Structure formats: C-alpha cells, structure tokens
Image (tube, rainbow, N blue to C red; front, side):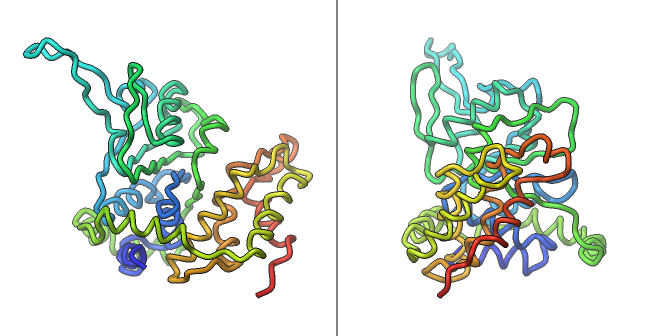
Length: 310
C-alpha cells in the first residue's frame, strides 16, 4: 500500500520517535478525505509531524499561524484593485492548497475560525457571492494547545465535529526522550530534507482504494453498538451522532488499507474509535470535574461492547 511508504519513512527511519500511532491516524484521515485535529502540549512535534507528512505526499502545502487579529480574508483571499487594468482581481488565500496546516487554531477569533467551516464541509469557499471549488484532495491539519488559558477561543462543537479525528499526542517515554536528545540535529536535518515519495495521483488513487475496502455485516453492527452505547453512558450529556459512526467506518477502512488488507477487522475499529468519537462526546459537567473525558468513556465502552466473532 502506497501510504505505508510514508509511514516507514517517518517512523521506522526514526525521524518521528514514538509517533507511529499519530502518523498512521493522520494518514488514515487523509485516505478518508477527512480533516485532523492534533491536540497536545507545546513541544511534542505536532507541527513537525504535519509538515513532514505533507512533504512526503507530493501535494501543495501551506501553513497558517493563527493569531487573535487574523481575519477571514487572510485565509480565504480577497479582491484587490489593479491600477494597470482598472479592475478588481482576486488574490487567493492560503486555503487554496491540498494540505492546509492551521497552527494553533484556537488562537484565532470565532469569526476567523468560521471561515474554515464551508471549506472543510463542502470543499469550496464563497467570497463576495462567488463560489470557488477547492482542488482535491483538500485536507486541514489543525493543531491546538489544550493548556492555554489566555488569548484563545475554544472551538465550537459545530467546528469540532468537522474534524474526522482528534489525535491526542503527548510526551515520549524516558527511553524515547533520551533517543530524541541524542539525535535531535540529525532528526531536524532529516525532516527539512524530505522529498516527495508519492504524487497527487497516487494519493487520489489510494483514496479510491480505501472506499472499496470490504466491511462485513458484523462490523457494521459493532460500530452501531459502540456509537449507541455512548448515548447510554451515565457520564455523557450528548453521545455520538450518525456522523460519528461514519467517521469510525471510514477510518477503519483506511486503517485496514494501510495494513495491506482489503477488509476490515474488529481491531481496526478499536484502533480508530477513540480519535473518531472522543471529540464528539459531551461529558456532563459533574463528571468532567472528576476527570472523565471522551477518550476514557470510549475506552470503557470498547471493553463493554461484545467483539464480533470471525
């Protein structure tokens, strides 16, 4: 499978230490034509991982650093007056790309965050009444820092739901941290010197292959049971919607394809359930203050729901 080349290049060559799951999940989101939200404390390689993946895929890539004073036109583009022709011409914003890295998305104002909604859902933007289609593939990789308290604007539920998966990335182990310190110069140079190993056509073909991955009826039942169980959990105020089930299905098919299989197994569903579901679950306030999170609830549900037999 072509995306396995990217995984090998980044993880097994040691450029991203202890980030195999995160890289696989980002690739699965891309195969599923979905957007990714990377959440983690500062300094855990969120931006480096997004840039490295984009470099290897042979796609157009742009990066936007979100700040409170950023305006929608800074992302979408705007009309400017051309003195030579006497006409207004449209200057494209960074959103006209294949992979858009939105760094620290929660630093932008709600107005600017909302500028991404149409692009993420419909893969088009409307400016001054004119609708412009975005080139396929179009994928947003957004990063956010969960511990910031000042100068940030929490993402509304409607926008969080636009992300196919939310990937939580944390600190490396002591062993991984030591390896990182020993090889930091080599790793930084290696990421900067990365060259594309795939073409745009390769990526589009892989996306079509992911759609054709086979899913047994028992797997559909398994996904339905998991999502419906989120609605019955005592700590949950709002559980998974049908869109949550669709996210699990698409990610499971992509996960199987990356593993070189043409069919989904229960382990694929288990692997992608938390990233697909956790950000779509709203926890009751009284449980939230006790440290209950969407991820913990999904992990608990996976232990409870019966796994389909082969």
